[in-house]
Length: 220
Image: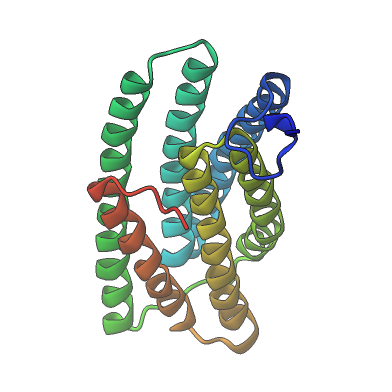
């Protein structure tokens, strides 16, 4: 006597209705990520340019990189839902991964040059209450969205959605380092905290960039 495959907790072939429900949830979460990142990027760039904050500007640019990755995944999930061939989906995935990987490396180079210049010139940074609020909100929102996408990815067996969810989680790390730098500058007047916080983003940016160029999917 055997159990039906769909009742097995580790089945790689979920029931069709269950799969459709989680695919819809995944699409909504990716769409929410795109919307939030657009708003986050506008606010971060405006606040960063106003305060002369490299970390905030870098965070804003990263928001649009995240948005590009989310948009590509949204398109792929939508196409997959309409029954596209697996080969077509995999081919587009590799191209998008490499493109996004390249933009991560460009952003890492920008952060290193601008942060290094600020430390060399000892340029002061204005306090940014808006930047602090934005970083705090992102630190709460991004882990929740990432958690939802990881669950959706497991339910539908999507390595691509899992990789994008981890990219969203990386945004949480960037939010944390950004918040530390902005608060330290505002409270203690540590002008160097902002460029140092920006430099703390670089390992993540390089890691994501190299994995994208190699076409890796960041799977456990």
